[in-house]
Length: 536
Image 1: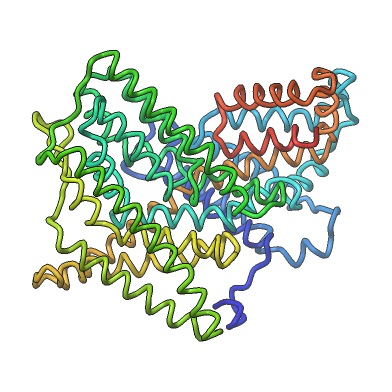
Image 2 (image 1 turned 90 degrees about the vertical axis):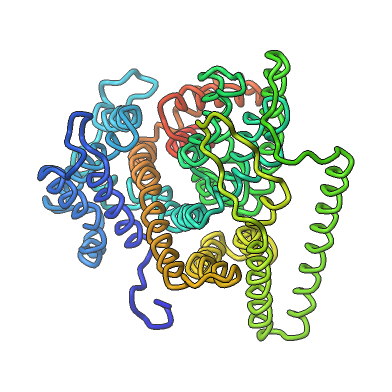
């Protein structure tokens, strides 16, 4: 739309500046400075920090034309803006992500200015404040580098898609389905926690969002069947962290790989799929061993069918899904061959018909609400009705995967179309289901859909704050490496320690990743390690 109208068309640098402006502003608005700070209102100092920080971030956007006429010749205003901007960015990072990320960034900044005083192996001539601030804040080598560009162009769209899908009810649907399928087994709640985290990982690359979505329900039930509180928490956290590996909506680091390594996102997805599946099989095995060791039992089912009938039903479902997938793939291919450019309208009508059909099918199932996990008696929902009630949510994931894998669209454009479809779903699903169920409250259902959409947009923005400031703060590290040449020195050190042995090199890089991972989020960890170690 902007390109067709010729308005609001921004280049990469301008987009990154606007993106960081929002991230910094929301950091100060959403996160109190200290634990004792007021949480019921935003203090005046935070308003000042937010406004000044936002101005510093959008400085490149507001004065883009002027800055482009004097590259390498910063004015006093440029330097002071960069200095204040970095200070406020680090304060925002401290609030959102904690001190470890800030300390790492400060160490690299200190190295920029203290080069002459370093040991001979890593010494350099040092840089002035003018040179350092110009490099870090006024170019795309530092804060406004590749990492922030990936955050603004790819990651936000996928995070927004995941939050809308979750608010629409897909997160709840995945938890219900996981419990219906696995809850009756030994240690069933733990196995359901693993499966529901894997399913939530399909739509959310955020570990924190995954824990919050699934953990509030799964942890009490795991404790009830005999897991210790620490075991229940460990199962939930490890399952949710592995959700970052689960395609198609993966963690932010996956999109950084696309940009840094220069490979298509579809390749990252293909290579992540097998490790993700293996990690979840391993987690299921671990919780099964623990359940056997402690002689745990599963949760009671409402209706118990024979093992043979359940197996037959599962086999027929899988076979039907494979046949349907093949029919859709070849059918759409044939339509595109016959109709050419007009095929998009036929495919769109088919998608709409499938959506309405699945809503009708789901509306025929009884309304299923999960019981309170802390209640005395918890019965598992029935498998068939539970799985059938939310099949329309899978259409949004199908749209995303189809655009990525079949149409070979860019990750950003694929996420855009999937998000537009999700917005349509959120606005229409509740009124249509109410109509199919013969209710008269269509207006109320439509209003609830709008409120859910707004709530989903809010959650998407809130989930992005951490990634936005993390990629910007990690840009300080990348900027220091490109300014001082420390990357070449690190390469020499690793080569020296490994003696040129590739396996030893990989082990050293893995150890560095593990040590940094104790304090840094995945995104920042990937940027630091890839910047320093990838050249080796």
